[in-house]
Length: 589
Image 1 (spheres, rainbow, N blue to C red):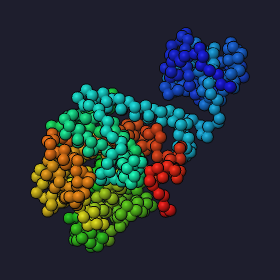
Image 2 (tube, rainbow, N blue to C red; image 1 turned 90 degrees about the vertical axis):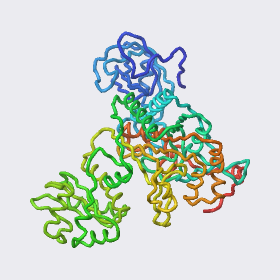
Image 3 (tube, rainbow, N blue to C red; image 1 turned 30 degrees about the horizontal axis):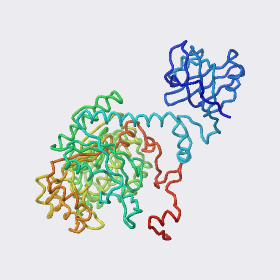
Image 4 (cartoon, rainbow, N blue to C red; image 1 turned 135 degrees about the horizontal axis):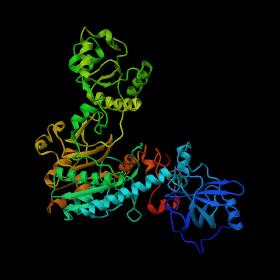
């Protein structure tokens, strides 16, 4: 039978015990027991760290016997006097002291866990997620979760100090198109009708601006039914904000101040302001990505003009079809990017849409080239000069339509930089601006919106809204950090006539507009202050700050790639009676 806590009250966290001579009481989990016969040492762990409990011949017999019974993950409370430790441990904060225990309580015994609770573990993630409550005892994850908590506190402090009002918006809302599939919740009362869980509080925060609240902030839970990846979970938290009587610069400046404050308080890092700004088309042309990692070079170069009349049909046919030939140069990489490695990169680019990969490797005095026999005298030298390649470098080339060439080279750039280990530490923020309003869907042949339908087009683009969608750019921006998109923002449409025109440009009928957005359009008819806002992904921000590889490392109870939660076996089936109450009939798939 377990002991109780009667007469004991924790006075210190394990990692905060210091000094000598004082009486303390600590509580925590057993990390390790070292039983040396007449000496027993127990490392006791809580979320602040580890402290050593010591038992010897001077310890009361009952207390000593209890200590000898302890195993990993037992829950203990211990009272004793802090003294200097004989064998110091410089790897932990309390490594110079220990507690000579005179009262020990075993509050809970523990079975042998399915894996050892240690920081560096080779246990497969699936097993750790099944026993997530044990995995969360590891210091790395506890530090990540506590960092996430500190981010939330600093966020609220900053925006409160700048006049923002925290307002909660509904979790059960109307289903509206926002770019991903909704999670739907059936209504018991209104059978056959459904609520949607919010992909974002977009419409509600705009209505709060119409209501005159001026500055809104919320750490909003959002839900999107989309395929998962390392930086995506089906449920996530957004630092959601909206401001009235502002332009793009006001919103960007406010958020730069927030980022500066956050990194200063959290990491002691002075993030330079203002952040660089890069137009969308410049980012795609130089980095092949709308979320470029600018910590390293290897920028994309267009060599189409140099090879348009060469004898290599792969290049010339791509240009004749309206595409381009572009290259990246990996400095001092020719010895690492061997033919075998380039073959692997070729398979990689084929897997993401390219037809193949041309290359130049300059190892010896003369460069070797996969298409050298097609080059006239001087053409290869012109290419090397244009891309800044020298002896020791490798040049990787893609020829195709631009919608393939740019993103493939962008992905290849990132992959090669990781392989060469040339990405420096640090935090490179940038604003991506002047984002196209529409993108062309090659499957349907139609132009579709890149943003939610409440984004304002740039003033000079309004005339092209119905006639030349490729010329329409939005008053929208993204915040990018080290190749991760943290946020999207925009100035919103507040003119109801323009809003209706925008809906129609997106292919919505009058009936669809009324059914999905009628209440918003009606609200604008009563006067709406000009406003805009953005939402920063708190989870992604925490992931980058913690140096984690996945959102799962900064989320207490995450989902895996198939959107299931292994610990609780969620999602799960429900009984027939529950479905009947909701008026739902299950069909065989």
